[in-house]
Length: 171
Image (cartoon, rainbow, N blue to C red):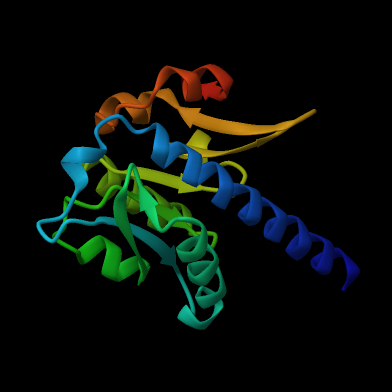
C-alpha cells in the first residue's frame, strides 16, 4: 500500500509542477491572439479520463492562478476525453491532461491538438516522448519538456526563452 501512496504522491507533485509549467508555456505562445474566442476570452481545457469530481480541485487552482493571459480573460473548462475529442472548437489555446490516458487515448488527444494548433500538456512521464507537445522533465532539476516534432506539426509558436530553458525531445 505504501508503494501506491508514494506513486500517487509523486503523480500529484508532477501535476502540481505541471500546472505551473503549463501556465508559463501558455504565456510563451506567440500566436495567442489567434486563439481568442468571438466572445473575447481564451479557452483552456482540463482533460480527464474517468471522473470529473477528481478534476474540480485542479480546475479551481488553475482558474485562480490563470485569470488572464496578456490581459485577455481565460475560461477554464473540464472536459472528458470524449468531449475533448468531439469538440469542434479550434479556438482553444491549450489543454492539460489531468489523468493518465491509455496509449490509444493519448494518441487521439495528440492528433486532435495538432489538428487544432493547440498546446497539449501532460505532466505524466513518457507522454512527451509519445508525442504530447509539452510536459515535465524531472532530472537534477525540474524543467519544461517539449516535443519538437509535435511543436512543428501543431504550428504552435513558442517564445525562444521557453525553448532555451526546456529539455527538447527531437525523435
